[in-house]
Image (cartoon, rainbow, N blue to C red; front, side, top):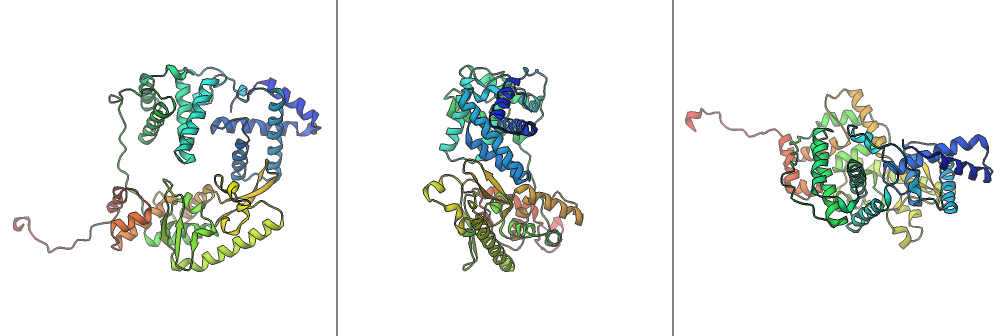
Length: 438
C-alpha cells in the first residue's frame, strides 16, 4: 500500500473529533480512508473526484462487504472530501515514499512512486482519459493504458513529459522483455499504450521503432469441451450459475456480455437475444435456445419480484451506464432496465444517499465454474470463455458455415473465427490408395 503522510491523518483525526465521531471508530475511519487512497492509486482514479468514490463502493460490493461496512466507508471518504474543501490541500499530496531502486520488479516500482505526480503528469493522465473517452473506447482500455503509462512514468523517474523521446520507449519495452519477462501480449499492449500516448496526448514524434523488437504471439488453440463434459459441468452448478453457463454455451456470449444483460435484451416472441455494446461496442443478435426458455421466463419473473421489493423499500433501482439517466429521469427504476442477473446485495451510492443494485460479479461465476470442474475432474483448463469456444466449435462440427459462425460470435474478421477449424478433426473419407497410384 502507498505511504500516507502522518500530517494528513492528524488533520483527518481533528475533523473526526469535530464531527463527534466516537473515538472507538477513528481507526476504522482511517482504515477506510487508507483503502480508498490505495484504490485510487492502483486504479488511476483522482482522489478528490467524487466519481472515484462510486467506483470504490462498487469494489467493496464486489468484495462482499456488509452494507454497514459500505456505509461506514462512504462516510469516511465523505469526511475526507470535506477536509480537502476546507484546507485546500492537493489530493495528490498523500503520495509519499522512497525513490525506486533500478533493480526492483515493475510491480514493486509502481507502488513506490516518489512524491506527487506533478502538474505536468496530471495533465498527461487527464489528457489520456479525455482522448480515450472521445473515441468511446472501453473502460478496460482506459484502465490498461493508464496502468502502463503509470509504469512508464515510474521507469523514467518522473521525467518531464516534454522531454520524453523515442529512446525512452525502446528502453522501457526492452526492460519489460528482458528484466520483467512479461508475456508477448503484455509487451504489445504496453507498446500500443505508449504509441497512443505519444500520438494523441503528447502530440510528439514517436520516432522510428523499426529496430524495437515486437514480440510475436504464439498461435493459441482454444480449449474445447465435448457436449458430455458441458453437461457434467452444468449438473454440478447451482442457481443462477447454471443458467449463466447455459447462456455462455448456448448463445456464444462473452462473460461480460452475459453479466450486462438486461430484461429488454430478451425477445421471447421471436426467440432472439440482442447483445448490446459487445466487444468493440458492436451489437449482434443470437437465437435463444428453446431448451432453456422456461428457465429464462422464471428468471424474468424473479427479477420482476425483486425489483418490486427494491422499489417498495425506496431503493434507486439498477446502475445505468453513461449519461442515460440524465437524459431519461429515473430510467434505473424501470423494469426493462433491470439486470437479468442481479447481485444479491445492494451497493451504497453516497452522493445519492441511497442504494442501487449491480449485476452479478464475474468473479463469482468463475469461482462457481472452477468448483464444478474440480468436482467432475475434467482434465482441461476450463474457464467461462471455454464455453464460448465450445459453442463455435460445435456449430462447426454440425456443418454451419464459417460466415454464419462469425456473425454469431461477433468477430470483425473471419480469420479470428477460422481458429476453430483447428479444433475440429478432419472427417474426409476416401478410398485407401497407395501413393504410387496418386
